[in-house]
Image 1 (cartoon, helix red, strand yellow):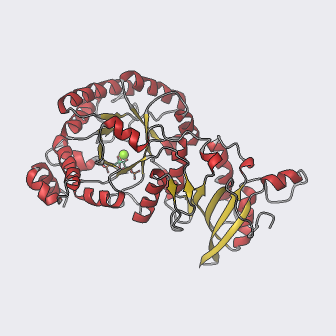
Image 2: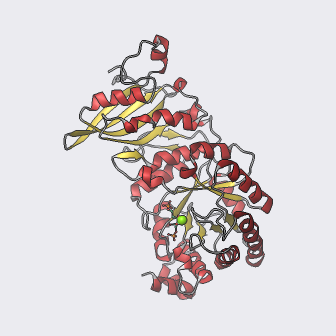
Image 3: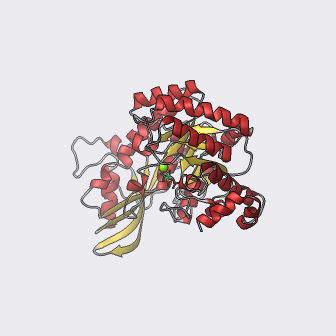
Length: 425
Ligand SMILES: O=C(O)[C@@](O)(COP(=O)(O)O)[C@H](O)[C@H](O)COP(=O)(O)O
Ligand SMILES: [Mg+2]
């Protein structure tokens, strides 16, 4: 058990990992996971140097058995990795070790990474978000209320002009933000190079007519070099934002994009995350991914709504919010397994999206607070009277909360909200 040292006290400089494991023998599997995720393999090797072994060997410093499932024991293990084992500025390289082969080992019946604690030196090796919540509020000139966004629906299929008109209607109705859907890229019926100019032209028109700052989030997700070309187009067209499907793009592309010289606010969509985050026995928690994306420098990130169509319990979604919003996070041993200091790194604006409609707005704000971007696609374009009225209804729902009124009271003032409350009981 070379890698197990239950008397070890982690140092401030260690990268810490907390893992839920299922296995016949927790001690043995903890030892194997520590080995396989660092300098070891299935057998002793004659090529091992004592200094390598001493300096770079991680230590399993906690093993807590929490239950049994069939013949397997279930436990929470914590491993402390010395930073010298990593090229700390290289996120994909780091994850290849601490979140790589270990998932494939026969000896584990379940392995889920619950949380990482990134020490100061590691955190400071990353740029983090360029804007953070304050920077985005300044840009949109919205001081306190939640921001309102929409996703143009149908997801794909509208021609460029049709798409731009829907965007314009959403802005006129009161949306701050209009975004592409995660799978709208540059299909033949709506080419990116056409859409970006057409939509921003109508954005400008909507700004003039409403006197409000309006934002378009174009999805530039594509193979890297093509993504850069689209970012340059967005820059030329006058976009302050871009949207990245961060999970399908990969950690390398997201890290590299943040290190380019663009000044965009980066909106991170997490399509495919649930393939990694949803199973309670396997994978990596969304909280852990969210911490990684904060380091990599996204400014906005989808975290769930609790009350909408996507999976995500209240405690977990609130824990994720804490990790991306707060500067000093305290552990709760339920979703947050380490105290995490972000050493002044900018925070990330949480995005609540997925099956949202006006009736859910008060609950979302009660759960996540006012520093949230509330997005509705179907909940706006599905309004019986169309997009403009749908946006008016969602905006009124947010205003009701800010004014301390019930939705029903507000619906007496704003008939579009009344229609929406009737339609989506
Ligand atoms: O395609 C959709 O489903 C959405 O555009 C929402 O549309 P609706 O408002 O019409 O539901 C978003 O992609 C989801 O919110 C993503 O999920 P999450 O935010 O959980 O990552
Ligand atoms: Mg979508």
